[in-house]
Length: 566
Ligand SMILES: O=P(O)(O)OC[C@H]1O[C@H](O[C@H]2O[C@H](CO)[C@@H](O)[C@H](O)[C@H]2O)[C@H](O)[C@@H](O)[C@@H]1O
Image (cartoon, rainbow, N blue to C red; front, side):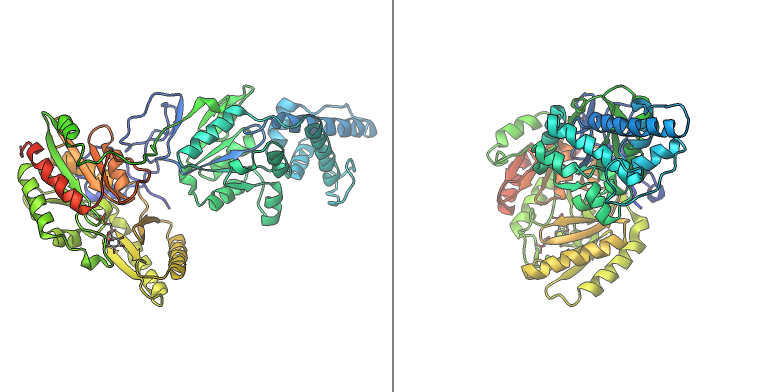
């Protein structure tokens, strides 16, 4: 079960716990325009383009080969027609019946397209009421059996490819390069047993992270389309969840398979027109060519963001005429990363800096730690806090701010915690930290070999609890409720609750870890994200600081920009 919540940015501010019991399946904004699954919660402004896939919403894209990547669907169709017409005319003559040729428009698309070779033979013959024996894998091409006819069709197909080669759709290749640039994983699937040969002959083999083809399907015992199995196997190998993956298909059986696999987005490719049948059979959107699908440039590869300390004049300009509000991560931002969580104590001069800043503007802490834990560590009553990566929010006394996302997951978290503790007990150095809404598995003190074992055990336990998702941090794995909630959403909730969501406020978020990226994304265009790092990586932040000491110095520089409390 995967859940997500329909909480829109800035709306509503404080969400009653009951709201989280709803099971709403649509997640963040996926693509435009409006004829597609529209979702709530995205904080990004989408550029107007025909259809846009964003890395924020998708981890992987799975491509069918024939007709999507290579112009081989028509070669297959012609080979099927040649083989079936020869057979049908003989069959008609022998049985004293009129010869009704194979129709590419109707028969190919309905009975053969996208299916494994021998399924295609069976399916079409059944539609004509013809019964042939299965035959043997070593039947000669043209033998009157399922195997014999399938092999003849393949001979015709290979002959064409041998004589003319295979054409590639350049727009698809450009699209794949754009996806890869954004960090999307890609897979190629095909019911065809010739998939590897076609990819090799067109130099496309290295373009895909994973390939699952007709030969693999036989070995793995995978059912053919319209069963979703081949797509699910590709997603499994890519380690991508179907709800965060796209299927791109040109065959009716293919879009049916994408739909049956509950993939987040099924794109139909109808190069020659018939869009309707793809839409009716499960495509969410149908295009004539993949150049109609855009890829949003979510991830800017930034090597060396400007230092926030050096850019204070620029930041002051952005804050001119506004109040500021500052939200801070704890570990790695207010304290250096240390061996164990209990040793991460905020230094006195850092405490002084944040208190001074809070005299002039709102300060909040949004931490991966348990709410109570981070409140006790920071110990400043006037702050607002969000713990468990934003799942658990509390304001200072009198402000009545309280929000908990994922309360219904507590029993599952209890069970998973128990199982993890038991399974990890024997591994030296592992520490299981239970937060109210998450379980962190620390492996900082574990040997590298054993760390792999920890990873495997966490994966195993995670696979038993599909309600939980695995997340990553600095030398930790985490299991959290698999709902559409994160530090960015907690930040929006706090801004709204504190009436800091207007244009007259410039919010800041400073953090050092992967989970802080959600908050950086959330503030893009409306606030300032600052990453704390010792070396550059891909980030949605706009400025950088090197360590908690630089954070302290920067916070002191922010004090005069505060603008006071309302
Ligand atoms: O969001 P944060 O406030 O940065 O919290 C993230 C995690 O911080 C803690 O773990 C990290 O810091 C520890 C102490 O320096 C370090 O030993 C560990 O390796 C780091 O991952 C905390 O224990 C976790 O619960 C937080 O999720």
